[in-house]
Amino acid sequence: MPATFNNYAEPPGIYIEEELEARGWLQADLAYLLNASASTVNQIIRGKSGISAEMAKSLGEAFNTSPDLFLTLQKAWDLQQAREPDPGIAKRRVLLEFPIREMFQREWIKESSEEMVEYQIAKFFGEDSINEIPYLHHAAKRIGSTQDTSPAQMAWLFRVVQIAKEMVVPRYSAKKLKETVLRMSSLRLEPEHIRDVPRLLNDCGVRLVIVEKLRGSNIDGVCTWLDKRSPVIGMTTLHNRIDNFWFVLRHEIAHVLHKHGQSTAIIDIDTGQLEQNINKEEQIANEEAADFCIDQEKMENFFIRKKPYFYERDVKGFAFKMGVHPGIVVGQIQKRTQDYRYLKKHQVEVRDIILPSATYDGWGHVAPVYS
Image 1 (cartoon, one colour):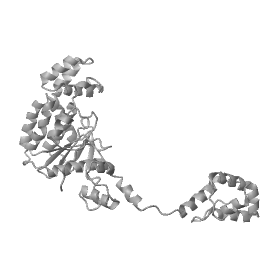
Image 2 (cartoon, helix red, strand yellow; image 1 turned 135 degrees about the vertical axis):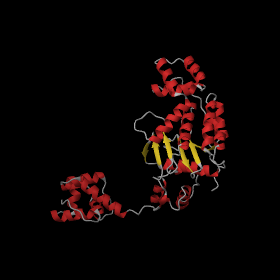
Image 3 (cartoon, helix red, strand yellow; image 1 turned 90 degrees about the vertical axis):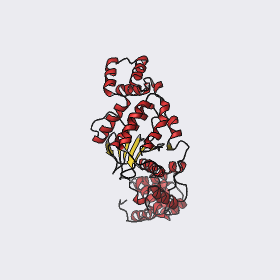
Image 4 (cartoon, one colour; image 1 turned 120 degrees about the vertical axis):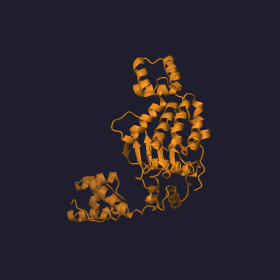
């Protein structure tokens, strides 16, 4: 049988009929070869019956060729005869590039028709059309390296900005923020003092917004600005530990004090991890955050003196001497040893402490956004 095809699909029966004529066979001859009824062969040739995988094997044997030929002919014909797909599928495929299921659940947008969902998403991102949403206008930075921002990360960032715009704060003062950082040092000892953080930052003109992470957007925090005089710190409390909370917060404060993120929001992922080749902005923020949590020179001396055995009494005594909660020292030891099970009981959860005094969205709560 010739292995050539027309550029358009025809019923496979046409090719079978042509082959019968070329060989001088009748339909009854093919029925005899296949041990099938004449009616079965006639139905296939007339295109009234499709070619199954089993029949394709039988036809291949009858004509001494590959059964794939008949399956390919049948598939092409079936596709040509099939109805065009619902045009809404293409629209919904575009919508699924965004975390719309979670956006529905979190009440950021309302479930509706494709057109209305498109409109709401475009409005959510501050654009007239869904095609104008700026995926790459912001650089997500994982340990300082630039990578493309995912739609989930973008949605989280825009929610932070939406909420921040609703907040009323005094004029931002870098001088006051520096003084507040010094005051915050005294809050590191008792977890309950974390509830004072939103008020202290608010008094400096810094908007602190806590938004629960979206699936697949493992963000620690963000530094962005509504304008040159309006800094915003966004946090997820992703790891929900006292050591991580203070490190991420101070990391973002460092970005604010150094005016990082004014042109492009800095989304921080895996903040403070030990990796090479981080950029200058992240290096500065990491160093200032680490020193805020605990004096790094003294921490290193303690670590060298006590390794490999870090007894709980020694950790608690050192933490008391440094004026910090033991969980902060534990976090530093875990980071150096890569053993994240060590004295885990001291890593107090902080989310339930800060949320009542913070502006937040998630965990069953929807922040009011009116614009």
